[in-house]
Every structure is written in structure tokens, then in C-alpha cells.
Amino acid sequence: MNINFLLAKKNVDIQFENITYKVLDWKNILKFKKKTILHGVSGTFGHSQLCAIIGCSGSGKSSLLNILSGYKPNGFNGTILINKEFRDLNLFKKQSCYIMQEEQLYSQLTVKEAMLFAAQLKFSTRTLDSNKLKLINDIINQLNFYDKYNTRTINLSGGEKRKLTIALELLHNPSVMFFDEPTTGLDSVSANQVLLILKKLSNSGRTIICTIHQASSLQLKMFDILYVLSPSGYCIYHGYTSNLYNFLTNQNLYCPLYHNIADFIIEVSFGEYGDHAYDLMKNVDNGKSPKWMNSSCEENALSNKIIPDERNEIKKRNRSIFIEIIILLKRFALITSREKFSVTRVMVHLLVSIVYGWIYYGIGNNALLIHDNLMLLFFSLMFIMFTASSTMIIHFPSELHILSKEYFNQWYALPTYYLSYTICDLPIQTLCTFLYCLFVYHFTGQPPEWLRFTYFNLMMLMVGLLSQAFGMFMGTIFTDLRFSTIFTSFFLMPWMMFGGVFIKISDTPLMFRWIFDISFMKHGMEAILHCVYGLNRPRLPCPEIFCYHTSPKKVLEELDMPINKYWYNLATVTSIYLIIKVLVYQTLKRKLFLH
Image 1: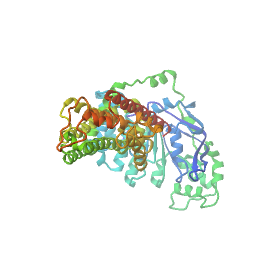
Image 2: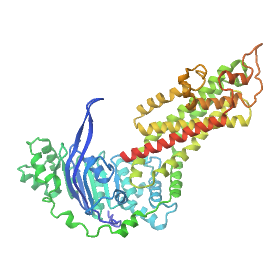
Image 3: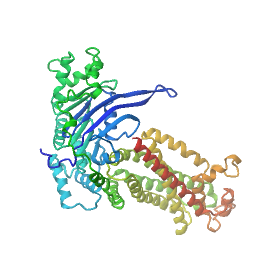
Image 4: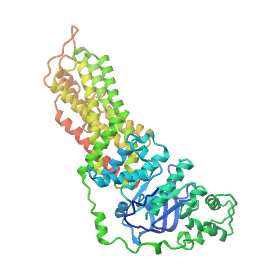
């Protein structure tokens, strides 16, 4: 297999000095202290090298990888140099990619579709010319992946998903590639195939850096550079893999026969063969010493650094926001059309509307059943609110993992993704709301006027969109479904209390009446009641000798909603919706920045 047809655009050498990283270690809910994960480690990773960061769990492997890749842009001390210059993080992201341990892929797309969408987004074009299509085919062929070209991602094995993830990032032709435990979860054959691909990529001039949790002797030989971290976060070896045996024997440490030397040095770091970790760290000067690098990466580095013209060329790689939105909308539409979740949403709304229409059949035109009709309208608003918020609580957290990878690897800008996601889900929510309102409104005997129904449906839709935005907000903050569900219910329930039905405004203590003014449930309910009982509706028929609520106007007066403020109610709900959407965007942006 030859991947050298896709040579690195630029040879990149990475040097880091005195990297210290601390995290908060919570002892209990009120007490915490700072725990140091990395203690002033240093090192160099050069181009055309396959580099491995190894160590036991908790040694700081992933933390170091996140810092070097820029995935963790702050919160650490130390210096990172790219070709002997201070790292420009925005520029570096355009030259590199980060492939995470878990494959963040859309399971509904085929390999071909995933590659085409990735190419369109990375090259910011709706149509791919023959050269770009050839590039896709070459990558697929070189990764021995062509027989899976029309296979959906969900049907790929673990090793095949890892290959696809690599293929997607090769379209961008990065000079530096970071891998977080690329062999974890794979069988030995698949793991060897993945490492062989990484070795070929490094031979093409790239800098390949990955963390490895456990490597066999055969796999260890594929790595050029080994960087070993102790459990306490110090570097105890930095050099060529072939020099590791001599390094250990110089410290009077002899790897037992038929024992994996990578396992042996980790066992040494644990102190199973005596307290040697400090001596090993001093021998390599916590990663600074080039003693065990046969030839310094700095000497091998190309003298041509990023000259101003090339820097400007990379920075000026313009994106078309409009094209990105079109591509993302097309991708979202294709995924949505294949998701059972979207069909389930529609069917739930349809089924519940039929059940409600059956149970409450004809009550909307009966003066004797006004209270029941009020409960129907209120519970309809509640149903739209909770189903809309639940869809985002369930669905959006799964999007966050893919968004995090694609956004970090410069596939698209965050505003284009956010706008595309919102637009794509709008038709589904609109269809769900319309079908529910159509059946409930008709079968429960509400006024058969298209104007009333349009206003009714519009307000229901806005309440649903607002609830969706709130569910999206909670799903962004809490990726754990348990927390997002309980907190969403906790925050939505008070607005139901101040919805104007359970308790009237005039019966509420003065100090709490202002809450009605900001309650979207009150504004939504008030608008819906005026759709049904306002707009000069005639008196309701009474099947008995006397009915107290034959006058629709009297119903509204008793609920403290005598004045028709439909457009004010709609504008208020829309304003709250837009405020929450902006809040979600800012929260999402902050979360992606902090990772």
C-alpha cells in the first residue's frame, strides 16, 4: 500500500518546553485542590516520524496530546514551537487534524456520501471537479476501502470506521495528524492495519503523533519515536524506539526475556522493580535531552519555515458561508430522511392527536364543557412543549461529538452549522405541530374557521420552537441525558404554574404577578384562548336548560384575559425564543472553546 502519492504540503516539526497542566480534584462537593497532571515535560516530534506517547492510565497522555494539538488551547503553562517559531494556533489548525478515540461519524451515511460531503465542506464547493473526485478515489483505494464504498457507516467494523475517519481527514492533506489511542477497541489484525497506515502516512512527510494505551512488540517496532510518561506526569523516556533497550540497560534495568519492553518500562514507572522513575526522568531531563535521539529532529527539520507569502496564502483560504450552509442542509436532510427518530416524532404527534380527538370529541362547541376544553387546550400546549424540548435533549448531545471533531478540524464555521441545523429541523417540527393541531382542532369541535386555525397553529409552533431551543440549551450544558431531562422539567414546570389556567392573575399575590409577563406559557395560552373564544365568536350552544359559560367573552374575562393581544403574545414568545437561541449559540461556542 502506497500513500506517498499524497505528500505533506509542509514539513512541520513540533517542539514543546516545560508543559505543566493542572486540574481541579474535587474531594467532596465543598472541597477541592489542584492536581498536577503534567510536570514541566518537554520534547520534540519531527516530520516523517511516527511518534507514540505511552504511559499508564492517568499519566497525562491524552492531556499532552490535547495541548499539542490545540484541542486544549489554554489552562496550561509552557511553550509550544512549530518549526522553531511560536505556535499560531489558528494557522496550526489549518495544517493539522485531530482524530479522536471514538469514531465521530454519521451512521446513516455511506462511505461514499461521507467522503463527498467532507470534500465539499473542506474545499468549500458544491461541485467537485475531476481532480478532487480522483483524490477521493485514490485515498479510498490506497486504504483498501473501495469494496465498502457504498456501505453505510453503521455496518462498518471498528477498524473500517477508523480507516474512514483517517480518509476523511486526508482530504485536507494535513501536515500533522494527532490520534488518540487509534488501536483501542480493535482486534490485533485491525490494529496492525491501522498502525501500518499511520506508518505510511509518516513516510509521506507528515508528523504523526498518537497516544497508545497498550502496544504489542510488533506494533511497538512500527513507531519511530517513543515518549513515555510516568504515573506522576513526568517524562521518563524520549527517544527512538530502537534505543529504549540500551536506555534501560544503562540504568541497570533489564527487560525479561519474551517480555514486551513497552510494558516493562511502564511497570518500572510504577515501581515494580524499585524506585527508578526519578533516575529515568533525570536521565532524559524530563524530555529535554536529545541523547537518545540518534539525530536531533531539529537538525532534520527543513530550513524553510513558513514564509510570509505562504502564511498569508493559508490564512486567506476563504470559505463561502452560503455554500457551507447549502452543503450542511443537504447532509442534514439526507440524514434526517434515513433516521427512524424523525418518523417517530411525526407518528407520536399524529397518534396523540387522534387519541385526544377521540376522547374530547366535539367538546369545543359545547357551553357545558368549557372547563374540559380549557384543560384540553392547556394540555395540548404542554404536550407540544415537552415533546419539542425532549427531542433536542435526546438528539442534540449526539450531534455535539461530531460537531466538536469537525469544527476543530476546520470543516466549517460554527454559525453556518448552527443555522443549518436550525433550518433543517424546522420543517419536521412544523409538520409535527400542524398534524397535531389539525386533528385536535377538527375533532374536538373548535371553531371551523381557517383564520382561527392558522393563528392557533402558529402560536403552537412558536411555543414548540421555544421549547426546542430550551431543550437544546439544556442538552448543550448537560451531555448526560439524566441531568438534562430532570433539569429541563425543573425549569419548565414553573412556567406552567404561571400559564394563566391553574391560577388566575387576579388570584396571584402581587409580588408574583410580574412572572406572568415573562411566562411564555401564559402568552401562548392567552393567544390560543383568543383564537378559540375571541375574534367575536357567537354564543355557544347549550345542551341543557342553563349553561353558565355560553358567552365566549365571559370565559375570557373570568380568566383575566379579556383583551385580544395575539400579536403582542406572539412577539413576546418569538423574542424569548430568539434570546434562548442566542444563549444556546454562545454556550455552544464557549463549550467548544473549552472542550
